[in-house]
Length: 319
Image (cartoon, rainbow, N blue to C red; front, side):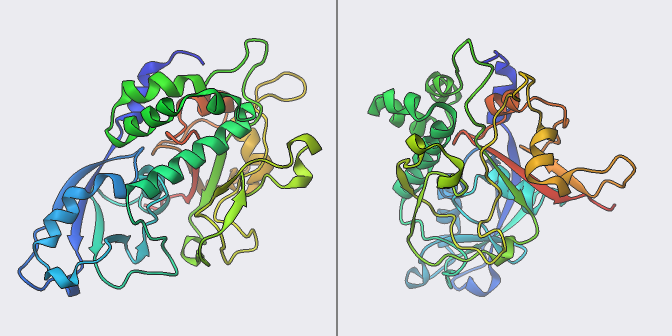
């Protein structure tokens, strides 16, 4: 990969000022003061909110404390989505700090998956990394790693250790010198509309990638390992909460595909017509990359730790 380590560091150390407030109906013992935290964009809510949980438990009777969950303006926040993705998708046009409401009661069974422990977060994170490497390298890199390498990736994320994580993750960002990039780019495109229609019918299994269907793959690659997928079952015509398709970083003529090329093929509504008014923002890590940016470069530098480019399409602010 090209060596733009400053970009990698800027992405890793991105923070969102956040104000956590306990839901008013749950205060029983005494008034609970808000709790302020700088949330790391690349992490997950259930990894970085232990102090939030301890702070608000003091205001509750012990028998009222059950599984913690979070919501923003009525939308339950999915713990298996990276924090930066949640913010970009739901609150990017809002003033800071990000105001999140904390709940210990009335868990929204139809909207959220339970997260019994950090082991569940690790299992989800590693399954995403394996899926991404199946797209990039036919799983060769991740499978050649030792178990301690997988653990180092996880501990680097969990403990917010940039150097520890990237010492291993760098291998997942490499490709043969005779090629100009990965086999396919791991990406997921999310649109703000429709998030509230998500529902979860229970524990299910899916093959790698919701769009890696048999018709898209040669016979030798049709049966990829199955990983537990928490993002299943939505009430939309697409039958999935995001767009994910096979897309190569290099065109047949050798030209590098750009972010604009990707959007034109898989989400053309996100592109502003030449003579039209801009209606959408295309965001990754809180910024709008130029549509001319090569997709391979974006994948190497702006992917989340799970090795996916999580791209948010949100309405253009009107103010």
